[in-house]
Image 1 (cartoon, rainbow over the protein chains, first blue to last red):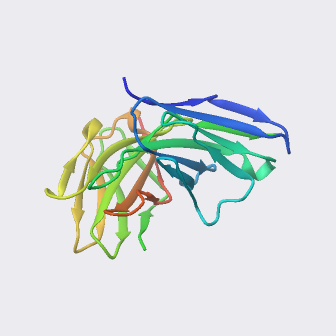
Image 2 (image 1 turned 90 degrees about the vertical axis):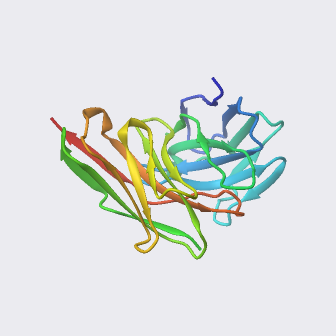
Length: 114
Length: 114
């Protein structure tokens, strides 16, 4: 089945230690999104890639970076994680078209910062 | 700009009872509306969507929603709750021609009592 895969599902890091979260997709979608979801809150969009074009949300901290080496993969890098960055990180994909962009979500990576 | 308001952060029903989760939106252009469900430590799964056409939309797991433009609402219903319906539910809006960015409501936790 075509799908969105996130690895690892659970990640523990130390305060200030860089961490990378991975997302891959077999849907061949050209748009990929990264969301941060804190406990009992709605997902918050951090940035998205439209093909190779990177689009950052205005309020996304500089601490968060992303890479998309090819259509299938996208990475979220947190350069110096703080305690406030502990959250679920969700990757989603969609295909650009003439109408709406339905997003397909991965299972998420839960990040713990010690 | 678009926004979504979900009335009631927690809803509790008995098994077999009607489920009603409320969602109101604000949009200056015709919206596309979605309901997603999230189980603990999982990603978001699309329940149903409204784009154009029929205003009563049927989704998975027996859920349906009705788009009411005059009331700017998109409430989610299910005639008979099942224990497995206990989860977090998010209403979201996007618009044609936008970046595909989803604007989420704050979510409603559905509790189903035996």
